[in-house]
Image (cartoon, rainbow, N blue to C red):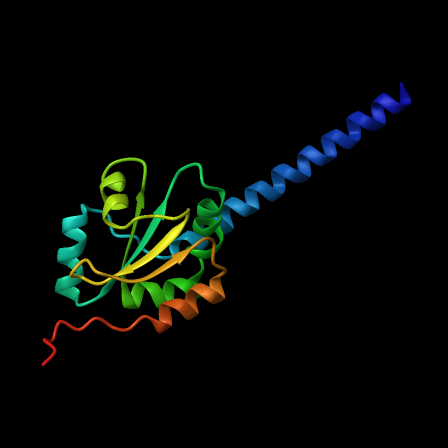
Amino acid sequence: MRIYRQLMFTFALMLTVSVAFAGDGTKKESKTAEKGIVFTKGTWAEILKKAKAENKVIFFDAYTTWCGPCKLLQKNVFTRADVAQVFNKNFINVKFDMESGEGPMLAEKYPLQGYPTLFFINPDGKMVKEVIGYQNPETLIKIGQKIPKYTNKAVL
């Protein structure tokens, strides 16, 4: 009986601690999400039009709902303020589930080798850079900083 009580006490203590930490994590996560990358919603045609109007390259997160590394990017990288500072300022940020909506059509236009795939696409729809797989925040910032700014000036 004594072992049973000890086990129940230990279980109750673990449950209490895990609930307390889960509550704190939720608050931090929602605050962090406010500082994260802002993803524009709309059709691909609307995204291209917006990119042309703002003279910006599109940062395109090609993901699936079942992809573990895609979820980690969304949770640990896209929510960071330092990543958002670079991406919100310099890009039109979008994400598409490649297995629903316009995703399959976009997968034909921009073939995928794996998930996640991060594309940088100019407003004319041409791929500037493709990055495959999970990227840590520091690496993603460096990649974003190296993408040339879009200019619609004609080359003579």
